[in-house]
Amino acid sequence: MKGRGFVIIGMVLAIFVFAATAGCGGSSQGLPGTTYRMAAKIDDGAQKYFEHQRRCPVCGEKGLVAGQYVEVDGKRVYLDSEACKQEFKKNQSQYLGKMDEWKKQWESTH
Ligand SMILES: [Zn+2]
Image (cartoon, rainbow, N blue to C red; front, side):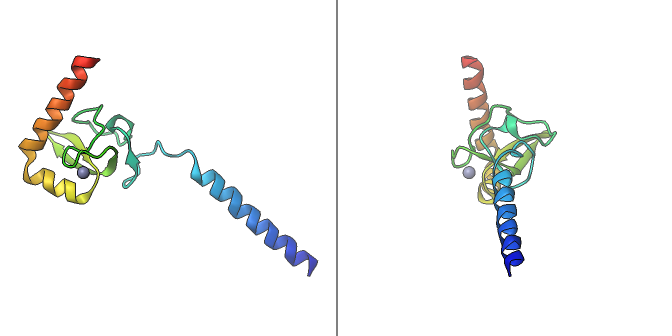
């Protein structure tokens, strides 16, 4: 009976250690579905429309999702949801105008 108790404690400890290590690090991988604060952090090896993109051009929310993007001339524009992706495709020139505006803004301040 005493041995059984140690096994349970061991399991609890293992789960705790796993949870602690899984919670931090590893966020630099380009996993689809992961939220990033800027396009430059999305490590998917693809060309980006605007490296310093921080917001979704459709809803203006901060945070971009690696798997939610639209390719424009081989460059990726990142969004934060499937709904925004569909909306972007519908009014692409309008939202690209927004991206170009952000690009200009960034270039004039850096
Ligand atoms: Zn959005």
